[in-house]
Image (cartoon, helix red, strand yellow):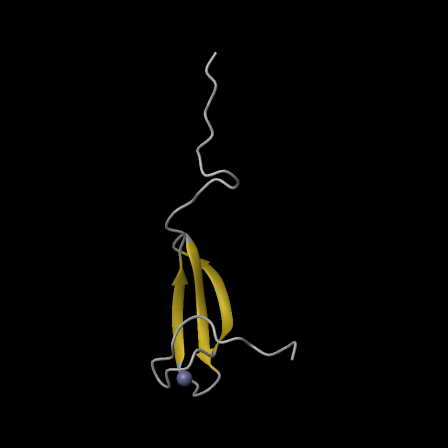
Length: 68
Ligand SMILES: [Zn+2]
Protein backbone atom coordinates (compact mmCIF):
# COMPACT_ATOMS: atom_id res chain seq x y z
CA UNK A 1 0.00 0.00 0.00
CA UNK A 2 1.47 3.28 -1.06
CA UNK A 3 -0.89 5.71 0.58
CA UNK A 4 -0.95 4.01 3.94
CA UNK A 5 -0.06 6.41 6.71
CA UNK A 6 2.65 5.19 9.02
CA UNK A 7 2.07 5.57 12.74
CA UNK A 8 4.37 8.44 13.54
CA UNK A 9 4.42 11.40 15.85
CA UNK A 10 2.44 11.98 18.97
CA UNK A 11 0.37 9.53 20.91
CA UNK A 12 -3.23 10.64 21.08
CA UNK A 13 -4.30 11.59 24.64
CA UNK A 14 -7.74 10.25 23.80
CA UNK A 15 -7.08 6.82 22.32
CA UNK A 16 -3.30 6.34 22.52
CA UNK A 17 -2.85 5.78 18.80
CA UNK A 18 -0.45 7.72 16.64
CA UNK A 19 -2.82 8.70 13.89
CA UNK A 20 -2.79 12.46 13.89
CA UNK A 21 -3.60 14.31 10.73
CA UNK A 22 -2.41 17.87 10.30
CA UNK A 23 -5.30 20.13 9.37
CA UNK A 24 -3.64 23.51 9.74
CA UNK A 25 -0.07 24.75 9.81
CA UNK A 26 1.17 28.25 10.34
CA UNK A 27 4.32 30.00 11.52
CA UNK A 28 4.28 31.03 15.15
CA UNK A 29 6.83 32.05 17.76
CA UNK A 30 9.75 31.30 15.48
CA UNK A 31 8.46 27.81 14.82
CA UNK A 32 5.55 26.07 13.22
CA UNK A 33 2.19 25.75 14.88
CA UNK A 34 0.09 22.83 13.71
CA UNK A 35 -3.48 21.94 14.44
CA UNK A 36 -3.91 18.18 14.40
CA UNK A 37 -6.86 15.87 14.62
CA UNK A 38 -6.72 12.22 15.60
CA UNK A 39 -8.19 10.28 12.71
CA UNK A 40 -9.06 7.46 15.08
CA UNK A 41 -11.09 9.24 17.77
CA UNK A 42 -11.28 12.87 16.68
CA UNK A 43 -9.19 14.27 19.52
CA UNK A 44 -7.89 17.74 18.59
CA UNK A 45 -4.51 19.08 19.62
CA UNK A 46 -2.27 21.98 18.72
CA UNK A 47 1.46 21.41 18.50
CA UNK A 48 4.34 23.83 18.25
CA UNK A 49 7.39 22.75 16.32
CA UNK A 50 10.53 24.71 17.12
CA UNK A 51 14.16 24.37 16.13
CA UNK A 52 16.18 24.08 19.31
CA UNK A 53 19.58 23.52 17.75
CA UNK A 54 21.17 24.03 14.39
CA UNK A 55 24.17 22.28 12.87
CA UNK A 56 26.17 22.74 9.72
CA UNK A 57 25.52 20.18 7.02
CA UNK A 58 28.37 17.88 6.10
CA UNK A 59 31.29 17.16 8.42
CA UNK A 60 30.47 17.78 12.03
CA UNK A 61 32.71 20.72 12.52
CA UNK A 62 32.21 24.41 12.35
CA UNK A 63 33.46 26.47 9.46
CA UNK A 64 36.57 28.34 10.37
CA UNK A 65 36.72 31.91 9.35
CA UNK A 66 39.95 32.92 7.67
CA UNK A 67 41.15 36.23 8.99
CA UNK A 68 43.68 38.03 6.83
ZN1 LIG B 1 -7.27 9.38 19.23
